[in-house]
Amino acid sequence: MKQETLTLVLVNLAGIMERADESLLPGVYKEVGAALHTDPTGLGSLTLFRSIVQSSCYPLAAYLAVHHNRAHVIALGAFLWAAATFLVAFSSTFLEVAVSRGLNGIGLAIVTPAIQSLVADSTDESNRGMAFGWLQLTGNLGSIIGGLSSVLIASRTFMGIPGWRVAFHLVGIISVIVGIMVRLFANDPRFSDTNSRAKDQSPKSFVSEVKYLMKEAKSVIKIPSFQIIVAQGVSGSFPWSALSFAPMWLELIGFSHEKTAVLMTLFVVAGSLGGLFGGKMGDVLAKRFPNSGRIFLSQISSGSAIPLAAVLLLVLPDDPSTTFIHGLVLFIMGFCVSWNGPATNNPIFAEIVPQKSRASVYALDRSFESVLSSFAPPTVGILAQHVYGYKTPKKSLDNVKVITDRENAASLAKALYTAIGIPMALCCFIYSFLYCTYPRDRERARMTALIELEMQQLEADDSPLREEHTRLNVSETNGLNGEERTEIDIKNGIDESIDFDDDDEEALLYRQLTFSNLAD
Image 1: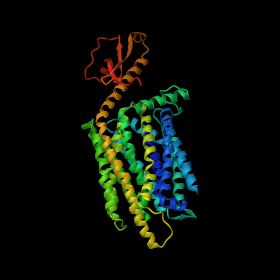
Image 2: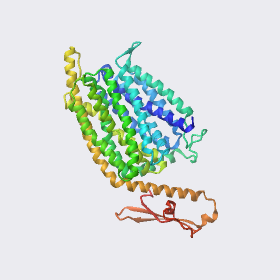
Image 3: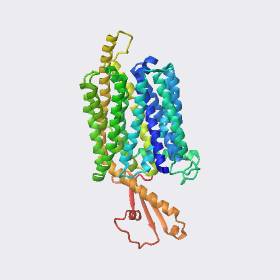
């Protein structure tokens, strides 16, 4: 097997285990709540604690992905989240679980930018959506593994150990094994086998690297398309976080653990296929409609979530005998609402920044989105309890318990739809602004890349004569809207008579190039 293929396989394995670890706790909410005597608000706050820590560590993740071997960074993340997963399995109080989940977020945070930037660097605009679709598919496979295994063994006991604790132990062990394999056999093409520094980078002090990272982050945040995608991502990822209560909702309806596992597996499988379909369609539409194809596809995806969620949560009966119809609606919904990432967000991020900034743009995106979307689970818990009448279960007769569970299922369904319908409507609307900003930001990134390439060629040329006759004129002017603009004029005294084809993209470098805010 080629080194590149082996690396991609191992990186996807790490992605599988990352998602498996994330999906463990939602699959055993009911059992953990009973063991720790915790209500839905408390269970939701566990995810909130982890997400806050995770989002705060994304700047560290960007630094590691830019300045260190990304394969080694992924392995380190696997070891960290595995250790925290073991701590959850040994925890006996709510505080211990909360602290362990917070530590778990550190490991989960540092692998995401490394994985996504590796995929972006390995593809181009014609197949990038498909590549991210495959990444989403393998990640969802991890969700299936984590969610399915935890739900199936949650109610069982092994040698006196509750099943939900065994699930955490298993995922922790497998994560360690995958981390070792990635560390030993995966390879980052930007780095040599014997050096953890980039091949084309000279060693710098930590302070200078941090300053550079801050400057790069500032330039990324100023990009209008980045701001818009983050804004829609905050609202668009809110429903996905809220859906962590879906297994609990199905069990309250009366579905067994096995049926709940099958239904949630159907939803995740549909999301995997939907991501692959969305990525492919995004590539197709981007070729035909380069300025609008990807954006329009995501508006269809986010808009479809509103009626589909209404049918699932508000129209279908709370009856465990309706397994087929619940599974059908879950499959359709999972397939249709999972296009945004591979079709639009991730490919556009790779197009609106230079290649060297890709790790930063993915890290910043996750940082902004996850910290706000992490409030979704506790929001659902608060709505269910204090707005829609969810009652904390108490020991009672079986028939009374069934009635209480059905009432709680209805309350939780209303809370879930509130956390899905409104954010998805906002997400669909916010995407509209990309029609104006995306083409301009994409062209600016291309021009910046061309200029950087020319500057590298000039620096690499050792000819004193060329250095003598090469001039770089930089002047500040004011744009039409009053904003500061930078004009860069590259003139070369040698071969002034060279004729360039107007269709030759490199000829642009010998003309006066004007674009906004390059000086930043």
